[in-house]
Length: 261
Image (cartoon, rainbow, N blue to C red; front, side, top):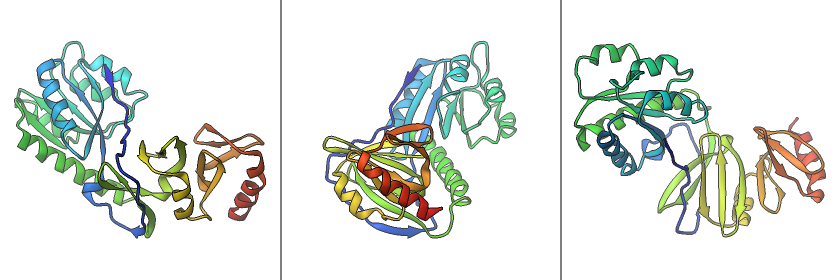
């Protein structure tokens, strides 16, 4: 099994713009993917196409269903490219054992399983060898499916900012942003979906983020007040993660949280 970090390193200074929206453009979606195939050649072919696609990021690749079953217990993905005929455990049997099923694109050399794929609500069914055009068609279906699913739960007028990363504007919804961390010349964004790093200063984000929602609790941290679960004299806890709290920031934090109660 190979695991891949989900980090986007920026080579340029960050620009951010306050906006409101009710829709999420497809070009702003990044799907976390896994590839499962016992054929190294076929697996590497799909891996390459994932890495070449701007809307996909490779989280893990596996050469059998048993390894996949264990690996996905603590690895969150949005889309799985899955072979069907594999030793010991088939792709269908793997899906039967997964507690949380992602979107599925079956990748197989046989057409006979196409009808059964409907029972698993497959996004698409690709026959080997997979062309780039056919692969991209499947990705478009997955992106549109993801967009429909996420738009259904987005509240109206949800605030977001644009963060420039790798020469592209990346949309970050403020309600999903847990905290920001300073890493030298970089700033790390930790959201409910993933983490990524941009070249920027904490000061620039401290000025732009709404003060009623975000607070600088330490020289290296800006936290989303709505995400704070508990705190003490030294730490702030968000989603089970303890972040340092500056001594002179504690009273400000208490006041800010009290005003939101």
